[in-house]
Image (cartoon, helix red, strand yellow):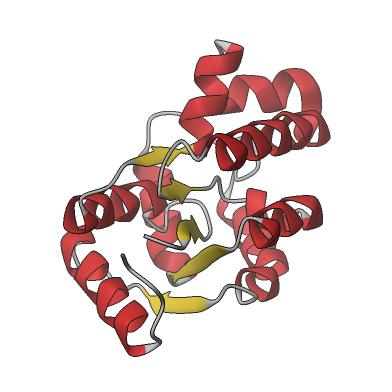
Amino acid sequence: MQHRIIIVGFMGCGKTTVARALSVLLKCDMLDLDKIISEQENKTVPELIQERGESGFRRAESFALKAVLQRKAAQIVALGGGAWTVERNRDLIKEEKGLVIFLDAPFDICWRRIAEQETARPLALDRSSAHRLYRERYSTYKLANLTVTVSADQSADELAVEILGAMKRRRFVLD
């Protein structure tokens, strides 16, 4: 596969789940950047944000992203919800010729998934602040190479098939 596939979108849109389903279809490795950061730091993302603030977490995130891209550790990388909003991260991905796919889920779907989780998200403590963040980030997500609309009734496997079809139609190199 020539392109590294980078999955972006708001919290709760399904980045990790869809990346996993896509990796099965393409028979390649995937990783979740938030999981890598948590393992390296031995803390959860919410703990890191609470400890270091968002800017401190973003520095750790950029460091981890650069390492992952340079090591070519996986063909598919699911970013955290805010990683794509950092210009330095977008530049790193562009340098590595990453194919960026935006999972465009309506806010209501994202919020329902966020609210269902046991772990609180420090950047989305309530619906109002989460919705404001969603609106702030949306135009940056749209900078992705490919946008795939997420609906409530679609499974991750169905979205992966849709992504694969869109990549073929747009003639992104798959092997």
